[in-house]
Amino acid sequence: MNQNAGSLSENAHLADNPIRFKVLVVDQPGPHLDDLMAVLGEVGYNVDAASDSEATYRKLRSSVRPVDLLIIDPESLPGVDGLRFLKVLKKDECCTDTQLIVTIRGLLDERFVDVRGELAIRASFNKVRPLEELLCLVTAILPPQGHNLRTSRRFPVKFLVHYAVGTNRQVFYASNLGLGGIFVCNSQPDPVGTLAQLAFTLPGNTVPLKAEAKVVRVVQHVSEVEPLHYQTFPPGNGLVFVEMRAEHRGLLKEFCDQEETRIFRMPAMLTNGPMAEKQVR
Image 1 (cartoon, helix red, strand yellow):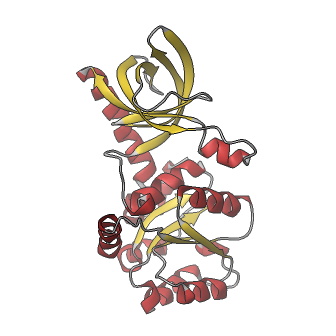
Image 2: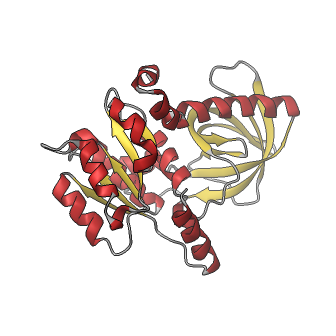
Image 3: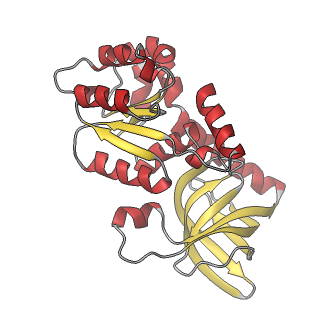
């Protein structure tokens, strides 16, 4: 996060008035744009969209407060060289502190390599990848509501978790995982403070991990919601790991480090050139 965004977070926390960071998404109309707008809005960002250079520039200039993050597909701007357009934007006072995520479908234009720092490009994201991974990038750059209450990043996952509370044993799917905790999908979530015994096997591994975990978050089922909302914010429990054997925590850290590299290696890709993009899929 840049110094401006960091100071905004601190001020929001001190004033007990969380900031709704402003995000502008620039892409052609379609499912990707619609889904991204919906998810970012649900998380709590002040989100807007544009589909051409004139609308993009107008919305950046007319925003009540500067846009904190610009998520842009440079190839989606009709009749405009995306890189030149971004260079012009960054010279404008309204974009001085705006950070960028460049979205692509295919190979990254190698001209972006040399201007990563100049344009404040924080990451590049291939749109063939799951939307949850783009959300990981956004929340890492701009923690929702101005501050991040998690001590470690969470990564999107989908595997079965054996979940036991007392003598009641069930099997649920996990939807995200981090070194500090896990989210378990459950249509009838347990209340905050519940202690559960968990057992699960990480993707690519054969050793079942065991942990005691405590419920710290409850997401209730909401009727009549869009499928995207249900998939991104399913009912269930957010838990923090209370106790885990050292060797199991080591395997968990190894998995999280791999996911960190896989999802957040995009900034490094901008340094290494477009050939690294071929390794993404």
